[in-house]
Image 1 (tube, rainbow, N blue to C red):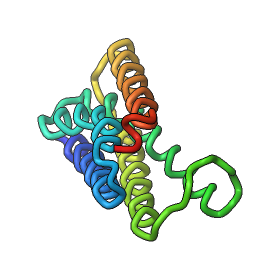
Image 2 (spheres, one colour):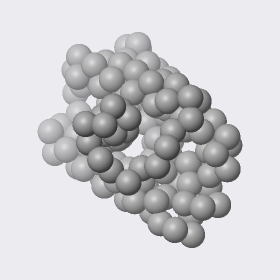
Image 3 (tube, rainbow, N blue to C red):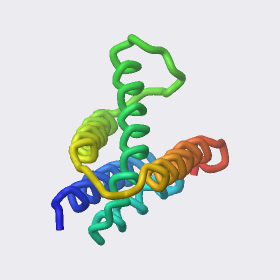
Image 4 (cartoon, rainbow, N blue to C red):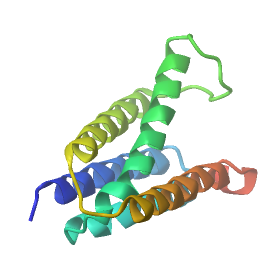
Length: 146
C-alpha cells in the first residue's frame, strides 16, 4: 500500500486536532466540530488506504490553507476581514493547520491514482462543497458563539 493515503489522513487529523484545541481554548467547540466534519472522510479513507483519500482530502486541504492565508494576511494588515483578534495560541494553531494543509496538498498532488476522472472530480466537488458549507454553517451566529 502506498504511504500517501496515511500521510493525507495524518495531515487531516492534525488540522482537526489543532482546530479542536482552538475551539476548546476559545469556548467554540461546537463551531470547530461543525467546521471539521468533512475532514473525517479523508481521515477514514486514508487510514483504509483508499485512493479516494486523495480526492476527498485535496479540496478540504485547499480550503483550510486558503483560510489560513487570509488569517495571516489579516494579521500582517495586508487584508482587512472582520476576523477579530488572535491569541498567541490561535496563531500557533494557524501555523499548524497551514503546514498540515500545504504538506497534504503536496502529497496529494504527487500521488497518482487509478480513480477515473469523473469519479475523482465528483468526489472532489462533493467534499469541497461540504467543507465550504461546513465552514459557512460554523460561522452562523447560533453556532459561532457556543
